[in-house]
Length: 112
Length: 113
Image (cartoon, rainbow over all chains, first blue to last red; front, top):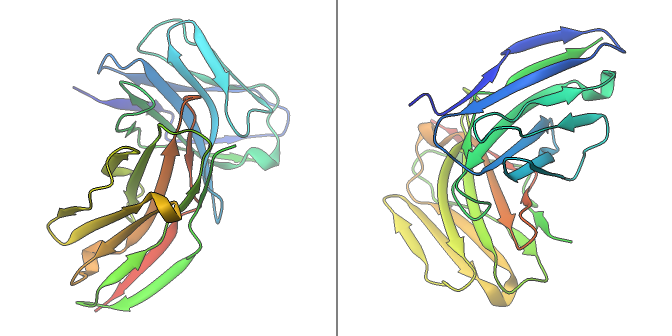
C-alpha cells in the first residue's frame, strides 16, 4: 500500500496562476481532508469530504475548491494563486473523522 | 465552535527530564474525539493516540502517557525520561459531530543533550 500520496512535492506559482494539488489514497478511506500549515498557525482545515460526491468547507476555504468524484482522489484547486497561499499543504485520509488520520508527505507551495 | 488551545508555543528541556505538553479544548458536543500527532524535523505527521469522550482512563505507552480530564477540558501529554529523538512539534486535535477535525497550533519541543 502506498498510503496517502501527494503531488507535486514542491511548486512555485506566480500570482494569479491556477493549479491543482493532487491527493490519492489506496486504503479505501471514506474521509479525506486538506490542511495548510503555516509557521505559528498549526494545521488549519481547508476542505474535507466524508465520501465520494460530498465535500464541505473547513476553517479557511476561501480561494480553494475541491471535488471528490472517487473514493481514492481528493484534488485541491487554487483558482487564482495569491502570496497568502504560500504554505505547506497536507492531505489526510481515514475511515472517518473519528479515526486516526493518515497524512501525505505534503506539498510546499510558494506563490510569488 | 470547537477550539483547541496549546498554550505552550515552545519548550526546551534537558534529556532525561520529564515534560508535559498541555492541550485544552472547547466543544458543545458530548461525543467527541481527541488526538495527538507528532511532527519530527523531517516533516511528516505521525499519529500518537486517539481518545473518545466517554473514556477518561489515562493511557500509558512506554515513555508516553496521556491524561484526559473532562472536568477541565484538558488532554495533556507527558513524556517521561525524554530523549533527543522526542524533539518535534506536537499537535493536539479535536473531532466532534460536524466531522471537522480541528488542530491546535502545536508545541515545539526541544530536547537538549
